[in-house]
Length: 138
Image 1 (cartoon, helix red, strand yellow):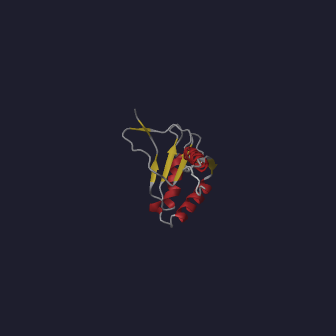
Image 2 (cartoon, rainbow, N blue to C red):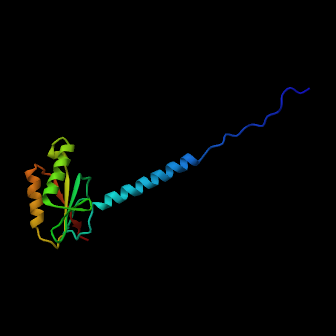
Image 3 (tube, helix red, strand yellow):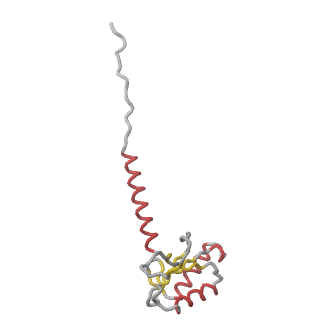
């Protein structure tokens, strides 16, 4: 009489479904993030300057169109709305203007009136780190 049966060694099976789900979630996340970073940049003809630096991370990107319209994150805003938005950003960094960096992108075909108004209002809020975006000459 035989007491033990011969067993075949069992192979550990690996379920790939969770790994595939995570890969697709990461893919969707990075596609969404790349679209959000591009929405801050309006199509503008920036002034050209020789020897400029690459853009560093910013808190707020303000776009001024050729017609003098102010666009932030794809939405046209008025000057008081811009001041309120920057005030909210100041509150989120502990009311320390030195921790707030703003990039001002202005169309070179427009006048400098709106740009001057934006910089004046920002300086009244105490914001001193305003970078003006330019294109590098080729």
